[in-house]
Length: 519
Image (cartoon, rainbow, N blue to C red; front, side):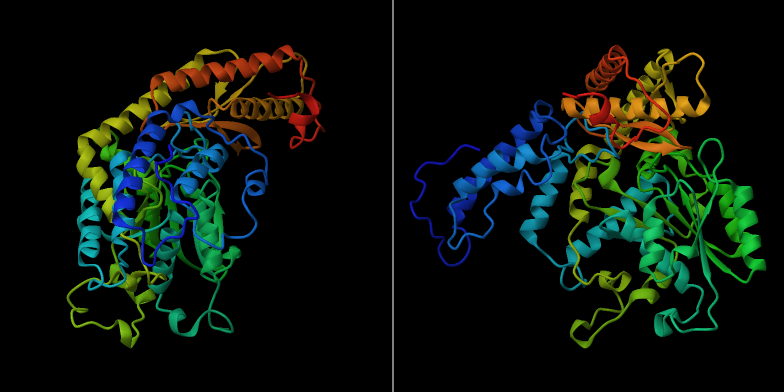
């Protein structure tokens, strides 16, 4: 950022806040800087080219005793912060699930910080409380969710899922809120079911709630990596015979590794038969349901007790914002409501106080940025962007399928492509081939990432090292996708020309440094 003129010598900020004139001047400069940063986001290496500890060594070990001029602080954003960032807003950020902040969402975040309201009570934030209900209703309509679903905004799906499981447990009426779970001989083992491909946040939720990891039973998946319903039924019946108390099934629409879709209608039938709470994790793929021709991805979800979706994953809303929809908000409230005298208000019986629906007291005005994003782009504009991302994923998958050197490893229902390089070698055992290809693909991924032109992540599918290309950035175009395919093939060719030798017992973790020098 450029330095402003007339920088004060021996800067000492006056009592109170920054003067309004300075705030306005620096505010203009920062907005200009952000605009340039977003416009030229592709000019920087997407993955930070630093080693652990490099950044911290450049920062003083002790805080300043006196205030520093804003010019110096902003200069260090350019000099220190930006070079050590992994740029999630880069159009070639294809790792994990691409989180990109759109301009209206950034403005919403700025206003949220300026208002600085604590959305704990309706009284402390009437507009924030009621706008949250509006934003939830709007997105629910766009996704085709039942009108009886109400909801609440948390930070991430991990927290949303934890609250959903708490509500599911509360519905059992086991007085766990009052008596806890420890030291109770009359309390059986409680059981939660999710597929082997379900997100790790479910396991963390059972840990956090004191259920323990043994409370989670992971159900095998079918060939398409979706939950095997026959195995679920068998598990529930077996647990009941052994005195375990099943109480919740977590179905996933858009798993993290492959974006597979669990058969929610069939799972809902099982839940009805056995009186189980059905929670749907649609953190990633729920947004796709706003596209009319993709609405079917949520088939069966109208029968769920709760559902989570994250606008910060695929609706271009800055991190963090997670929406938990719930059919039984009264049960969620019963699990968490605790009102000390100093928080009692006259209107409590006629309004929703958000503090009653979770472990947090203080809550940010997260709905504002989502409301601004939806208003600016509109339902059709958002749907068109998601539709384009899915087109780009299908295009990339087509390139993979057409090449003799690459193969798809999972279906492509959304905008994630799971694939790998698979050159053949004569007279090779299956195990040798698996180890060889795992090492090759790890090195290809590392090579691509170190170019700075793109950032990919990986997963493991049945022991196979799998490359993941997740398209979801609002600024990603076909050109970025095509360039990444070119870089992948460059890395494949480079490693092939090196005549990389691989053995079954070689250490995968150290394969890069041991076998090839990457740029």
